[in-house]
Length: 264
Picture 1: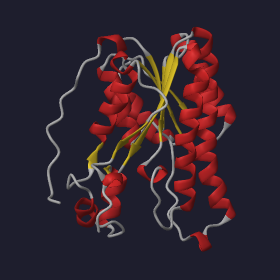
Picture 2: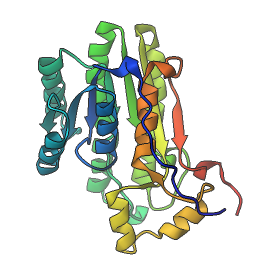
Picture 3: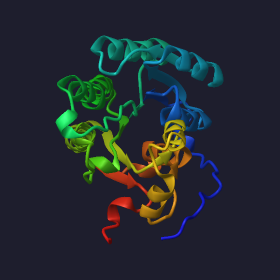
């Protein structure tokens, strides 16, 4: 496997997305912000739900003027309800939800505390459930809508010392499939993304702190590099568009070939 560089990014415009009402959780920074910005370039109306008040404030200042936000955790049912109520007030409802908020939990299983196990469940799984349910209630009533959940390649294949993360992300993949078949008759589509290692500010920090070996990760990836946030965002936008109107119940890998590669 050889190292390669990411191709230059260009936006594809999907006219059907213009004016759509989009909620992105964890949307104030990192991958979530990149996804929100990608939908903004499609001229969507945006709502951001994020637990970090300062980052949310900065994100809202940088986004189009009709973007709204709510500060809170996806694991808090009241915060989720308030975020959707904010969308109801601002836009009259919701068309697309991207459940991006999540946390890592890399620790040997014998050292994994019950508190940390529960935190991973609350954010990575219960948070997705709460947002899917709140979205579903609105979308079923209007007989249309798209939900995109963020699973992970580690929701498809296992990795050591990531029990809570792998368990919750695999559960998100199954939740996606279940909701897709349950709500298809009501005009909803539900899919998941399963990213591999993506170059984010957090990953760059871990590389600088020598907690991640970027060269080793790139060498293990058939395409020879980490992904970019723009590539993940592009896939989210495509799956939300009418170009993907016959795609539902899928966990779409975007990992540079990581999960396909079984040769030692």
